[in-house]
Length: 174
Length: 299
Image 1 (spheres, rainbow over the protein chains, first blue to last red):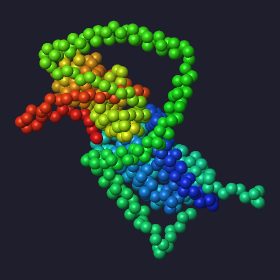
Image 2 (tube, chains in turn purple, cyan):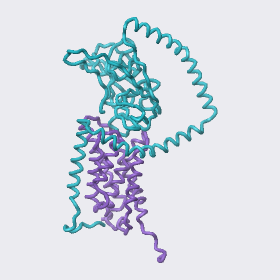
Image 3 (cartoon, rainbow over the protein chains, first blue to last red):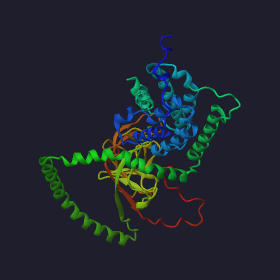
Image 4 (cartoon, helix red, strand yellow):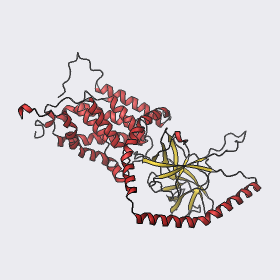
């Protein structure tokens, strides 16, 4: 059990401020709304799903289905897609994050990616199934590229989003 | 680490129960939207909430573009100016002829007691972003119901038809491009006047003519213009050019692929056209007037 050693995620962190969580989710929403096109758009991960999953794994008591569902509705209108498809996908993603959070937290950051990528792919797959049922066409495999990129970004996110919770160094022990 | 609270602390429904509630809600919303188109109000409300965020997100790109425009070289401006003057001179003659032809056409139509063609008004809109839904081809423009845009208005650019307004929000509107899989344009072959229906394929840059018989006279290079029989697109706007005609006797219909003439997926500005056309009153005692081939989808 190489990966099950105590990891940075188990060090004692300060409680996260709700305002910080809201700010990160808003930032993710903004990143999703960036007017990209072409390859940039194809490779852009779904930042809202990524940040939502992060907080569901890190703080499952603080965030939940209401946030996931409302964010999904916002993304549906912004993407001009069917109303409710992202809401459903994000709800299931939040559920997976909340149910798996103990398991994922025990891994160090890099193997966490192996949990995150399948969950993001699941998120994509739910949207895909919804659209196929509604009469859409399969848009091709690049559709899944964003989730892989999102998984690759996970270690960076995990470090950056935990920075504000790290205790300040105690001057007496310096 | 989180710990499971002892059961005598109330924590509300279990995650699974919450998931089920959310899923059922989502599915209800999905069905209401996809099948019955019941929730335009909800969309409007969410879009108003979203609008400031969209503006903020679009700001960096706009800023970069303006900065890029500012640092333009003298030579390129001179070149562009020369090109524009050249184009204007080239078109001046055609324009003068056009005025004479229009007058003549009006007279002839009066003589024939035919209805006058509609005067077409249009307003310029900027493409805010292309919608990120990989399953459809849509763009979002920065004009909405506050600017008088209505659902169903055709959208064109300087070379041809781009699409059609399908959803209108207060300050933005969604335009379904003619390359969208569910979008149809009734067209006319400019060479011989054959009518057909042009459908999107979901791929950028490819359109196809549907239900054209094998022996129909379509050739590579034929230009297709709107036929105007759908009361959505005004008559005579260039739409597409025939790229490839495949006649296989094993199938009922010819397989005709076309490429759009308008810059369907590469424009910064488009024109939203408003047509005020009065249709003649439907004949009084027919079982059903012929339904125009509506290409609109959604509200």
